Length: 401
Image 1: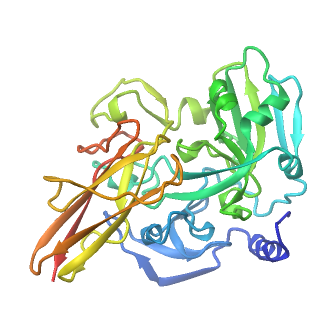
Image 2: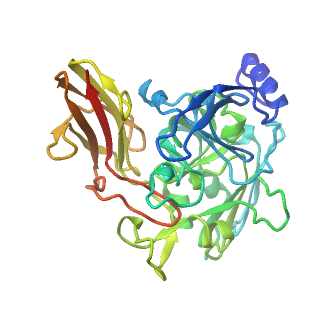
Image 3: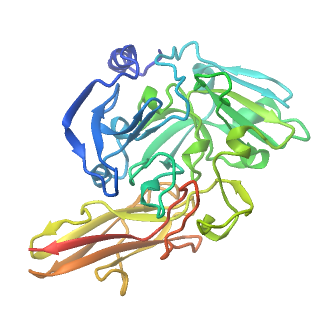
């Protein structure tokens, strides 16, 4: 492995030696579900603090929501984990790892980590969010990982621009899409390999798409894609291919299972349909939608009378947050809140407000965000059969003692 310091090397080596076997589990430490069958054990995996476990194989680990109140960046050891296939390397020798760039290119490349670091290094703060984040709140319920709201995180990613890599390779005439593949593999040969693609225009012209080798100033945890992963700011995490090993320029629109069949949304407003709808057109999921949350109060909390601060976060698919409003009456009336520091259009944007609470009352708090592109959170919860891109206004009922 290749690490920035001997301390990082020793820590990562010890973790990698343990593979993906849980390091510690306490049966008494259960995060109570906020929907039916939502209880989750807290378990520590290599390079991770205790996280909420949906499945251990492939690993699906959710960030406990209170962590998002600690700061704008999500710590590496608290960052959620989502793999699609169970054939995941438990060790990777970064010094030997290569990214093959091929397909419809003039000059095929084989890039080492050292080669990547010869390109101009850029940083981007960006939210990485699972397409199915908050799936467990869909009504009626849908199959898939029953995430609460913690299948997301915000990090400072550092790496080389994808457009610079493709420029060096020379994209050939007639190219349609660029496909990405990592070291994640299927257990059974009939399972389709996990591959994702972007339109060639986006891949070659968006300077914010990078091949990252650092996460929050350190090598990323193995479970988050060490030694390199694709970063597609503003788009859902399915495109953020971990342990990136192949970049292939295609002369056709990718028709592999993970593009043609999986990760598709209805081609309708807000990607919403009725549970009884049939025969509607679909498109591959893409940009994230605007969302906001309260981070320092839980639904069902009991508070003392007096003045309280309400804190939260908001984000969208890359235009940035224009405003966040808070309601104390379940959405009947709204008040604008002060926004905190702006870390860029792809990052969490923190906000806060002060409220006065009277003893013996019950309130329903709600928050809603508006993005710079004009989009706002939806009042009526959306529904689709995959449980993707929830953007509902979140509510939090509190009692005042």
